[in-house]
Length: 225
Image (cartoon, rainbow, N blue to C red):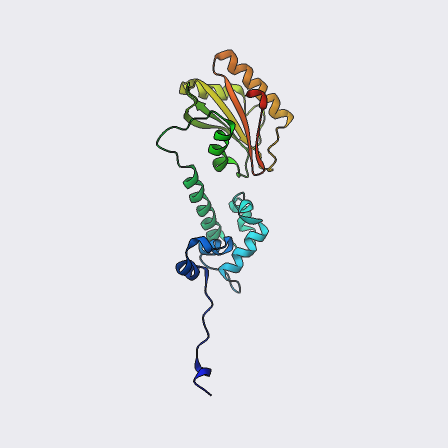
């Protein structure tokens, strides 16, 4: 046996070691997710588990739409690992949505969408809310009216304009997300928008726009301007 025969084989580099050596930018989605998971299961490394998770989600966009129960139903994912994944997603979401020192102003649909999409675009539960604005269309606050299936009883104009009057809003923008990923308005969406616009005009708190948020983009009602 020669000296060369005794040379130890190199230990395969794990995601954490790769991050420490090369930095965050070169890491794949699966490698970053493996670090979040922390450890794998019997017979499967954290990296292999992360690859499998992203295949089933599929991808990061699918992953951020999953609930705790859905994660726990996946092979190899327990309650602790599901909690780590959800906590990591929420930290990222809060980083994106941290409110700046100055109040944002919404003069275009694009500005409104950039504010709302990180907060609500990928939610797997439908939410209906309102942005309460001052006379210059600067944000006073945002308010969720209902969560769950959107219907006229939950998204009643009374609830929208009660929040507006209580906050002293000069105008409002309403929004809701489509968990299906389809941003196009439904007939019910059009009907609700017309009702809100009429009530807003009547009480002097106009409806500026109604945005629909989805992974597939943003829908809106062109008649609102």
